[in-house]
Length: 234
Image 1 (cartoon, helix red, strand yellow):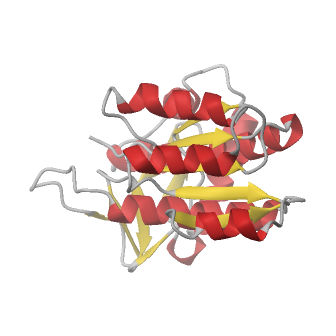
Image 2 (tube, rainbow, N blue to C red):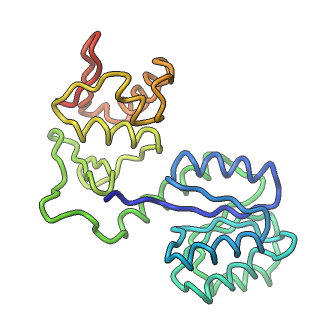
């Protein structure tokens, strides 16, 4: 069973919520959104009753109904291992001091800088996946693709030696689909269904994702195009 990464975003400002929601969705598998602290706490509580938890909660500080740190403190009292990322332009020493005792792993400072956000989120996801309990069977060993790359099919992680190759959600789905059928030709239709669940996705969109992956594995590219047929990992 593959490891699903889950994130809760709590942000009252619509623009910031849309920006962060978009970038979170490109990296993590499941992203839930709340517009204030009370709504965020209710979502956490609802999931926790089902024994489901978020890998990380991304939250603003100053919000209506319940501020972010109050929400974090209430959540931490229920699930002390919960990880948080704080988003704020608010520079109040009292708030920052209160956050010291919480499991805050990073801060996003407004105005938001996309490059910084993406870099931090990729590191957070890699950290989550690396620390996740092993869910694979004993005989599910990493797949050696070539002399440079290996793939952990259970965690959906591509390695360059010991380093994780940073892939977006769509890139991960593409790589997973192709390596799961190593030695077999994947038609455009098969890949579209695996990545977008929609065979009507354009060929140009598919080619764009494939090119992005090939750029990241250019050291020892393992995706081979078979003209008129599709793509294969040989």
